[in-house]
Structures are given as structure tokens and as C-alpha cells.
Length: 243
Image 1 (cartoon, rainbow, N blue to C red):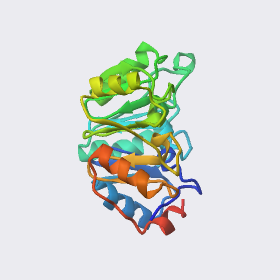
Image 2: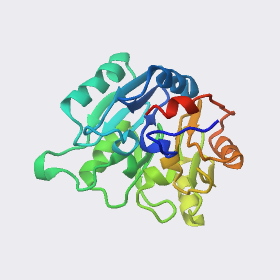
Image 3: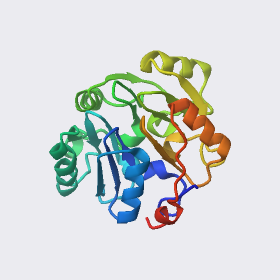
């Protein structure tokens, strides 16, 4: 079955996960949280907002070393995530650097960073200060680039520790660069009946995934092949509609 968040099949806009934790909107029901925990096989699910918004997939990025949030995340939000993630020893939590006028003009970090546990590809115009925060918080080697001609690489692709699924419009040169820096198999694909922004419609780790309601069987096959995953069929359609 397929599902939606906030009435949208673009589930990657609203959730972000690592190997051990997933961040979900505050409005998520207990049933939904349990369903997502089972799908991704994570230890901790945190219901929160970031900058008082539910767009967690846009405003946060994470890996096994921690989560990096938008600089506009409230202290209360930062504390909530720290209590659950740092409290369980699942990585550190940080915000993008800067205060007042020092903030990077681009701060929707989930859109701007594509990462697994070893490597991050980031928007080519990110400041060096932000790049350093990505490097330090996530403990990764950082490269700049595009996927499918898009600088918002976090929405244009999905990377786990097993593989990378890239925008179906990615060029040969971009795919070769992804293979080179991630040192993993790279495939192209789509979600939600042909949408190329796979990062916007898919949330995945090495153990499972959740994907938008309009994703076809052929697209599921490509996702599972690219990321080295088995089939996860959820009864969650009724749960995702509760967002």
C-alpha cells in the first residue's frame, strides 16, 4: 500500500531518518509512529517541529553521527530532539551556524545536503562555515555538486550506506561523480508515478523505507534494487492520512 503525509505523497518533505532514529511531525499519531518505526527498524522516533513547521525533511538532515537542523529551530525543538537522540547515544544534535545576519541565506538543510554515514554532497553555493558544520556534525567527507542539474541535492536523491537513488534526470557525469564520492552503486529512479525528486518522496535507511502513495510497482522495484532493500508493504495508508 501507498500513503500520504499532510495529504501529500511527498513523504520525504515531512520526515527524516538515520539508521537508528526518525524525526516525524508533532501531529503524528501513536499508530503512525509505531508503523514507521517498524518500517525503518529504528530505535527512536521523535515527534517534533522545526522552526514551528512540519517540514522536517526540508529543515533537518541526519546520519548515524547525528542530526543537523535549520538555524531557525527553536531552543525547545532542539532540546526535544537532543533528549531523545543524544539521550540514547544515537548521535549529537546541532543547528546550522550563525545568529542574526550571520546565518547562511540557504538554511533548509534537508534540501541542501545529501548524506549517508560517510559522505555528504551539498549545494554548490553553501558557505564554507555551513560546509564545516555539516562535516563536523555528521562526521563526513563533504563534496559540492548537483543531481539532475539541481543544486537542492537533498531532494534530488536519496543515499544510504548501501546505495544511492538519483533523480531520473541526472547526467552521466553526475552519476559517475556520485559513484566516485560515495563509493556505492548509483541508480536513477523516480517516485509518485514519475516524479524525479526522489528525496521528496522517499525516506530510507539500510533496513527499510517509506514512500509516497502514488509510487508505482516498477518504481518500488527500482528503489529496492538501488538501495539494497527488501519489499516493505504497509497497511499504513490509513495512518499517513492522519498527519
